[in-house]
Image 1 (cartoon, rainbow, N blue to C red):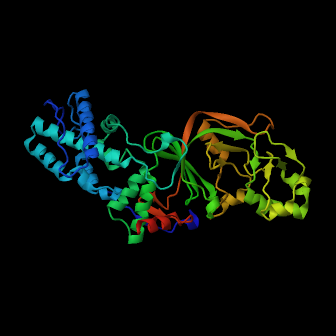
Image 2: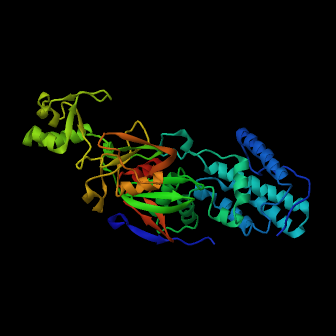
Image 3: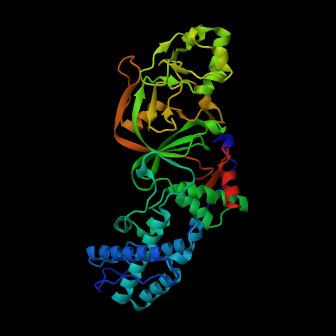
Length: 443
């Protein structure tokens, strides 16, 4: 990852009774002060936990042969919940330990059932506490991609259907793997300084908004200048990207959205600042021939029905000085800044993924040079992964839209601490988001 990697830190790994025939009972309440709202939520969750056990005929979840060390793993997770910015007292860890110890000593169905349900209740509360909007400035283009508490049935069914309940808990299968590994580093105190601890905590909150589960999705991490393609919880491919420049108006935002279609032979509309700083000076220097050579058209406005205007109708000195703004559109072709295709997740910020004809930008180490959109190292390869086939335009007609049969989520994120094997790799805080988060926390 070139000069982006500031260093690495080793990541240390953290380290039956079958069907229960006893009558079902609601898990004991937490032995700690709770608000009325929390008490009402706990009561509702307890009822759903009991319904889950009724549906499975009282079969144990935590003391079954396939549970492994799930009990120890869960209690360890709950006992270090401060790593998640949560209060461990919320989960009655001591009460759980006593109930589990009693169940293991007495081994009667009633004690086992009570401990089993208490563990399930604690897992439900913990998972639902974790799955929330971290409120770190993410744009949720599609509300479905905003973190939200899953159902009690969904939480427990996922745990019960995992090949190993212990592994599921250890790997925090209800969260993204990036979150789980950052959390592991933080809970294990695998950091070299207070500053590094803060970085892990800051990035853990951002990772909270990343997806879990077995679906197909893409993650773009601007500080790493890389895109990752996920299937079934695993990275199946990745590529370099060029993300937005550090200046505020050009930064690539944190955003969750569905990629809904691709556009082949796209036009490119030059942003007003690019027109003023880069294009208008070239027109003043070389005349309208520059526009013809590069395939630019002056448009009457920004609507879909805009007309092409003669270049002579524009005061280019005023445009270069920033006093006049115009719409300058580039036709499809070898020089087009969008390349051959772009991938759209319609949003008010005007952000998308796209091809690029400027290959040298991809080769550079510091790949934060776009106006906010994300240039891809290999757009055709990404299209094959996205659509399951190659995309080719039908003729030279501009703006050929190809709908995705099933929208695919893309998560534009800002992670300056990223798990890499058994290490954590740190990236430079190009946009200053880490520094801003530290300032807010210190007030």
